[in-house]
Length: 201
Image 1 (cartoon, one colour):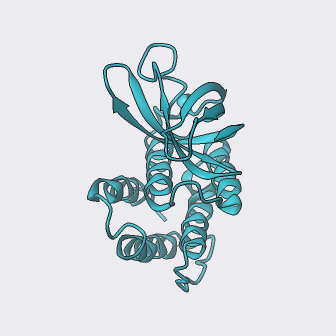
Image 2 (spheres, rainbow, N blue to C red):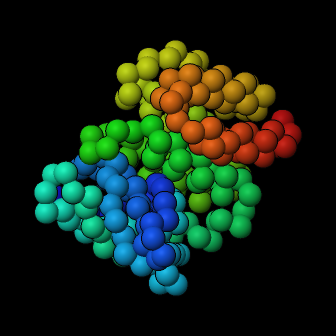
Image 3 (cartoon, rainbow, N blue to C red):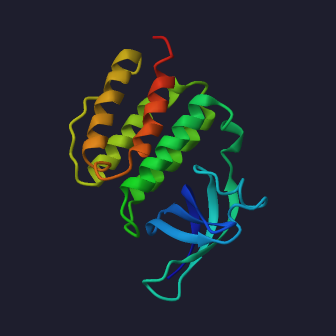
């Protein structure tokens, strides 16, 4: 395997003293897990933040070998991590993507949608500007995985309806793509829901 592309960092799992297994979402290969040496060091730690866009060089000598990756930062989400709502949204979306999608299966629509959604979270003046796109991404993910869940689109101005739809989609995610996953994935969504619930209509 040899792949050079831009990717979205979705999950970072410590490995050994300083390395990590990083799950990247790429346009060409979908989710790819790769070993990154020095991932937890001073230089790469701020690069490998879930939600960041990186230029990645992924190589493996054989199909069954865990690839090695070298990364360079393209777009950082670091400045928004001090904001409770954007930080919770980044955590949930990247956790959902990493936990739900099978490895090395391309989902170009999801890659494009997630990139646009992460950018919208950064530039929107408030969560009202990205809450519906977030729900649309979740519905798209369900459909791409074969779960055709009919979810009516709430009115943009009806915040209570948006939250009800958020709760409904959450039940579908928990029932289908995340049914066999660890509960800490849904914990990220629970935290996001609590923060969204503090917004008054």
